[in-house]
Image (cartoon, rainbow, N blue to C red; front, side):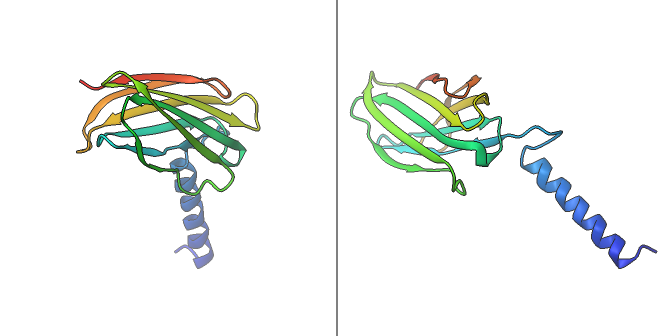
Length: 150
């Protein structure tokens, strides 16, 4: 019969394994994710995200530039929660033709060489996916995603 100390130790080990596996850290490799939402005046939602190949505390800022159809405005942007050391910025331009959406994601870290994959998903007001694009790159590189409504 295992002792109480052995049972507690096993529980702590299992808990640590679960935390590490759910946070995207494995075998010495770190990754974090910026995942804001942008709600537009035409009812569409842009789900932006960036997978960043460093620990969260090494991310300095993530800049999102959005180009949306003329006349469409920003209703709200919901930033990634619990990023106390990171700044997410949004700049919106209403300068595209109808149905065209572009995002430009640029990540800055204090590592200098982090890998980045920028994801942009265009959702209807009902949450249906209209278009999605993923663009791989590295930090300080402007990653362009071009999306269209059907």
